[in-house]
Image 1: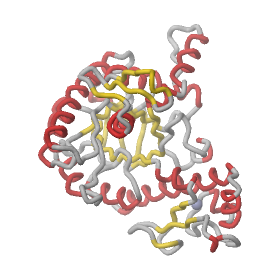
Image 2 (image 1 turned 90 degrees about the horizontal axis):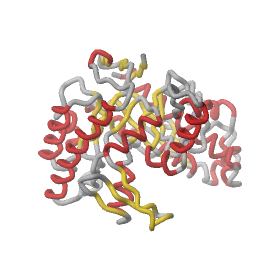
Image 3 (image 1 turned 120 degrees about the vertical axis):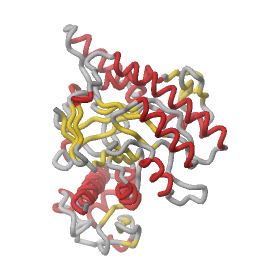
Length: 372
Ligand SMILES: [Zn+2]
């Protein structure tokens, strides 16, 4: 039986590892990770799993990502569907198109090679990964499109979600007996992989609510917020998050995909979202932007301050990044040393900063739980 305490934040392990941060360094705090199906396929991880399975020569044993990485059994692996990459490659870079069958796209480094990702193949990749939580392929948008485009993407997302669920159920070892999943509002217990639908509809309240209704009538274990809850002025759109949560049956588990800054996470949690993932802690760490408690750094958000470690003022600072953080980086290293390493582009400087930021985020989400 898998056990997941909510709310939970999963750092992104896009390319099969958390950027600059070996898993074991963060096990103490970690409840799970998010891996990206498309990247796992493109970097050759799926091929490695297939080769390793063949090398075992035992038909009944499948080597999955957990077997290869030795990622602990008590931690969750959530795999995304590839939908977000479609947003980036097709909508932004015009490297492909959406058809009823699936997404046909080309990668920026090999533009001549066309690839097809379908709702079915996305589920097959995620089954090969062996993830605990799997996401259906959706048709994501930026939220600024015309109503007709948003409507079509929303309806196609529903059709794809049905196809994904059929494949999810057909893959071996998967049953969808409701009795195998228990959620009491705080703790989620399950003994089979879970399937997450992605609610679309952009910033249009009617379409967002309709998407929630359509998907929940098919029935999924979790519901993700697809696209960005950002309005046309660039402001976080709490109204649309409320519409999303209210369009689902009460007690549904909701996932803020790619959310966000600590301020955004807090806002979404108050509305009812409980699962989050984001690249911000690791990406900011590599750029020397470190999260600290209010009052321990430069003024930044409502719930956090920042130490921009590259600044001259930290050159000889013998204090920890955040005096109120008990992560291994803060316990064992000074701001001056981390600044020095990052200035010299020493990879340990990025690892120490990532360890602090991810730890800080996990503690932040833990505090939300305790506040409630
Ligand atoms: Zn720390």
